[in-house]
Length: 108
Image (cartoon, rainbow, N blue to C red):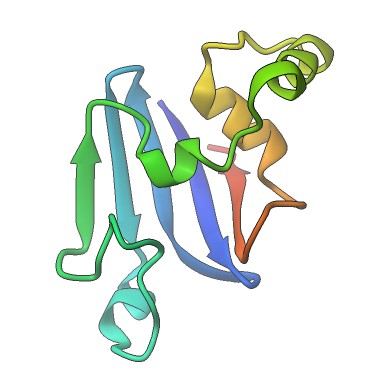
């Protein structure tokens, strides 16, 4: 199991968990979920429920990954399997992403 904290402009909004390669959970942090003024992380993960489950990495987070040659280069340099989307997300979405969302690994 791997876990990540999801931030919006440096404020933690939730956690993303990979239980295995076919089970993912995104859960809004209690504070973020309770504050009606705070926006949802994406249109596909509205704040109508606090926890979401998926058999694939949620498309919103998958779309934070590089594509094509850039993904191949990152995979090679970081020594991460190109098919390990969650691993690549943890390694590359910590600092410089498009938009306000960053994803940082949680060490247990």
